[in-house]
Structures are given as structure tokens and as C-alpha cells.
Image (cartoon, rainbow, N blue to C red; front, side):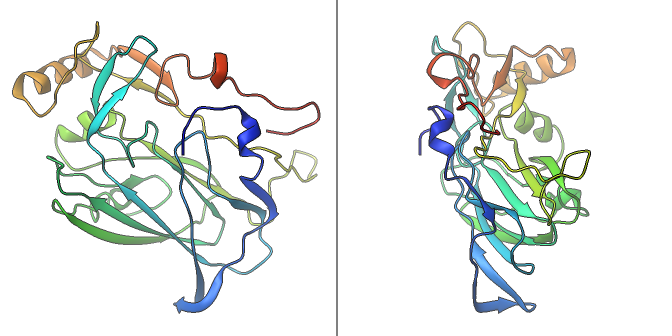
Length: 258
């Protein structure tokens, strides 16, 4: 699924009530359903109001060590993103549901990776429990309690925490109120389209189209230097400079809520 395109492509991303779940297989008495994640700005199909009881939603994320272009002149970084995209896919849950995350560290990677989500508490938001060896996976489940949109990133330990964060390894989890979002007067708020646009800063030693490689000692030294200076080389939306302009601009019809 491509990340580029107008908001017309997101019209099927949400619905008034929650999608159906399969009650044939249950854990802890809850029905289960699979949530298909897409590259931002696309979001998974989701319900805006709970028309059912709590359920377990299965999601999958993998650490992908690849090269990502972060501007329109071809500047690249050696990225460590969730599922290969900066930012990683958005996970959406309704309050009271459980998120069951399968976290993979595929063969071919070089580093330890974890998934640390502010949507879950304990063990570094799951970061302390999601450290599979190369070619392995772990499964973590947590209950969505607090509505809101919360960041997730990587917490493998030591200086690698910072290198993961500034190399594009972040995403988000949105927990929607079970009764739907409401305005200050209590009236319901419904969205016609729902894109995922996430801001971030890439503090990379790589500038002027020079690719840094955090797998080498000199590359790591450069990344640590720019992190200590707190001087990001790029401020990005959806992983690229200028991601809200031109053909990638967000569009909506008159009367629509985004």
C-alpha cells in the first residue's frame, strides 16, 4: 500500500460501529479479530463507537532495517522503522479492547529491536519484554485503558535507544473512547476520513546526501554527536520533508470531518 495520495483514499478507513469479530476462537473469554495495518497515512479499518463487547485485536509489527529517502532531493538515512515506513503503522483500538502484538526481528537485521508503547504500562511499555533474537518473534498483549493517541518507539537499552528513535523507529497507538468521541457540549463527533500524519525529528549525521550507517563505528559516532547537540538535521511529517504539500496535501470535501 502506497503512502502517497489524497484523503479520498481514506474514506473506507473508519465506520460508525466497530468491525465484526470472530467469536469462534477465544482467549480469556474474549473474541478475536485481525487488524490489517497499512503504511501511513493509511489507517486500519476501525469502529468509532463500540457496538459490541471488548475483543482482542491481533496486530503484527516487524523491525525493518532499510534505506529511506527523507526529502525530495533524494537524501537518505539508514533507517530502523516499524514495518519499513517512517512513521510506523498506526494501531487503533477502542477503550476496553486488548491489543495483541506479534513483534518480529527478521533474519537479515543486525541489531536488537523492541516495541515500547506508551499505551501499555510496565516493562518499559513492553520494551523490556519484546527483545527477540534475529529470526525470532514474541507476542505481547495489553488492555487499552486510557483514550488518546500515544507514541510507540524502541527501547533495546543503552545508546541504541536514542539511535533507534532518531533513525525513524516510531509509530503510534490510538485508543478511542468506547462511546465515541464527543465535543465539549457532549455532542458526538464522527470522522469521515482519518489519516495518520506524525511529526518527528531525524537527528542524523547524514546531510548533503551522505548516507550514514549506524552499523559502523564512525557512523555511530556521528549519530551520537548530533544527538548530544540536540540539532535535528530534518523535521519531517510522515517521514519526509514536504509530506503535506503538492500531490501529498490533505484534501477533504466541504462538510466532511477529518
